[in-house]
Amino acid sequence: MGLALLFGLFFLGLIAGMPVAFALGLATVGGFLYEGLPLFIAFQRILSGISVFSLLAIPFFIFAGELMMQGGIAARLVRLAASAVGFMRGGLGVVNVASSMLFGGISGSAVADTSALGSILVPVMKEKGYDADYAVNVTVTSSVAGVVIPPSHNMILYAVAAGGVSVSNLFIAGILPGILMCVILGVVAWAIAVRRGYPGEPFPGFRALGISFLVAIPGLLTAVIIVGGVLSGVMTVTESGAFGAIWAILVTAFVYRELTWDKFVLAVVAAVRTTALVMILVATASAFAYLLALYRVPDLLATSVTMISDNPIVILLLLNVTLLVLGMIMDMAALILICTPIFLPVVTDLGMDPLQFGVILMMNLGLGLCTPPVGACLFVGCVVGGIRIDQAVRTILPFYAAIIVALMLVTYVPFFSMYLPSLFD
Image 1 (cartoon, rainbow, N blue to C red):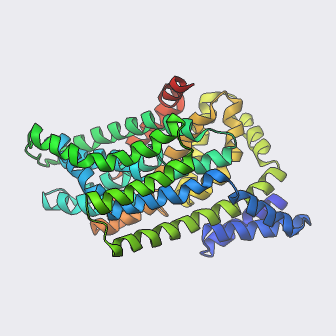
Image 2 (cartoon, one colour):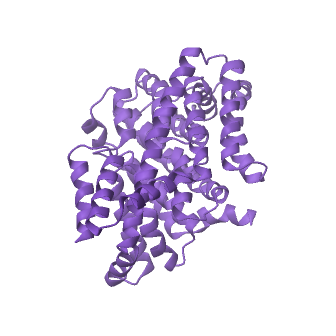
Image 3 (cartoon, one colour):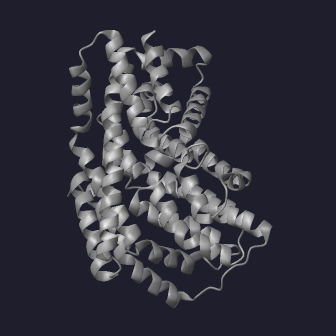
């Protein structure tokens, strides 16, 4: 009864239009009152949820991403990708995917990727004769690279929720799966472009390619500083995030000279707003997870899954389907914090490494950002492209399929997520 009340209040809050964090808080308070537990314990769990040192890295990552979006780094990465692969038939679609891989590996945010690159590439693609739905679909789905390829603040949330998972190893684990996903998306984008007869762009020459690369180096170094600082052990995740933000300010203000005071203020406001939303989610989800543990939800789920099948292949498929469905209807950060303590014990019993499950979780929930009814990236992409959501969804299925193929490979072939971390052990 208590578990039914907990989830009933949560979904009632969502149906009523509450933000996810408030719905979690409502359900948590209701659960504590029903069980007769002192409310001060709930507040202790809320405070302990955000009293984690590694969470300090999140505002720095978010701020660095906003600075890069406002300061011209995205435009230079697009120019680099266009010089490298724009000559292919329908090359702007492949350029879009390559740009997302580069920018996602710097900003760590799928929504920022969609907004920044979409505002640059979608108008250009439409001007060159590409259909709006194609331009939007490529932009939206390739933005998932932002949550898989490091640095990713969502990976930090997973590391906190999983308890004891190394953030640096998690970052390394996401590199190959992110590249794999972008390669498959690039192939799909190219195939659709060829079938629709989209044009290619003339190759600008190796000199232009070299110049584009040199110009993009200061922006690319942001990712090197953040990820390299963590992997080398020179800096903690929080310190690398702080240095990354400082470097982003220096590059955008003094090298590219596009970061004006007004743009700086916009970046600060956006970063503060996003950080506040994430931290409120972390706080309320921590108290919610306390009640899930009290009701032994992980044990109940493990028992239920093994009753359906004891075949690891089937169990992992069921977990993937469950995560995909949940990702379609709920916020990614909240799902990471709620689902990790529920599903992680199930997959570890199957012998899966927490690092591999972390990457699987990122890819599943990242796809949820691109699907209706609550996909944030899909909404942003449609606004940028000037089309309705139903117009985009009609032709987006091949791109969904590309991400799902990559997801299945990462799920059933540990090599993709575990090879690089094994080199650093």
